[in-house]
Image (cartoon, rainbow, N blue to C red; front, side, top):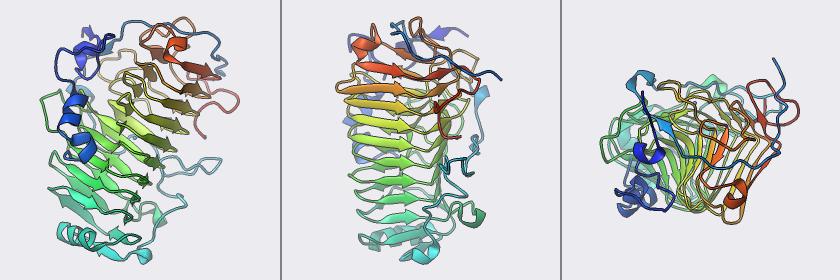
Length: 389
């Protein structure tokens, strides 16, 4: 299958002059109030270390085909404590669960959940006790926790699912979403066919925490944050929509994403090019639709990518090479990619398409990004490179 440039595949990926021939998908989302207001609804030792500055090359990606789809079941192993107790992906062994005894309200149906969220006040907890199907957006009020029992005594947890292209949960400031399975209708790859596109969690306020959740099946994003969200110990997989398909999409503010497992998203973590994010101590599985960790132009303010393991080296559709990290703009304050274990090839000769890390600019110096102590190749590295294991 012929390869396409990034601009040919997806109109949200602009050319080097910042021009787009069509309204970009991110611009459409912002103009429509989607991303902000939430109207939308997984041998040898690699001894290589970064010593040289890669230069840019023309961006490439590959067409995606239905044959690579998945059924929405978890494709990354989660819920088992790591040797250092990090408990990547949450689940069984996660230490900060919320028991049902802590609930102020319980809900086993859509009407019960809608009523409980309408009544709950700051500091209270609404508990999901069953599998609830929703067809309209639910709002989690400021300071309210929405919880279930994922990992408690081996529990799979309550679930909130939808078959509609909606924002499932619109979350106000200082809220917590914890211990719940959150599922949408789009766990298999599909070609772009226009808007709308659903999201699992859209944060509309500061101080939102999403932890110990399994999130999959959303055409736009599993989690969209634009403030200072903290996403951790989650299993986020199967959000593979062409043109969108983000595990966590950062559209502003300063997000921290850590101790999660990711697999089979278009981009597992993405940035609109504004704001900042820290991505650390995560395990990214072997399947991806496009490059795994993304930064759009203009490049954001602070980008820190550290102590992650990224297995993916190929697009799942036809075996085309893919990058673990692609920085496509000038990071304003600080950009660091350090202590990661990338299964992809060492970019010491220029950061060409398909190598582990790449910038769209002429050099890492121009991108204001440094590469430090990363390991390359599938052989387990010595030292502390990569996610906890």
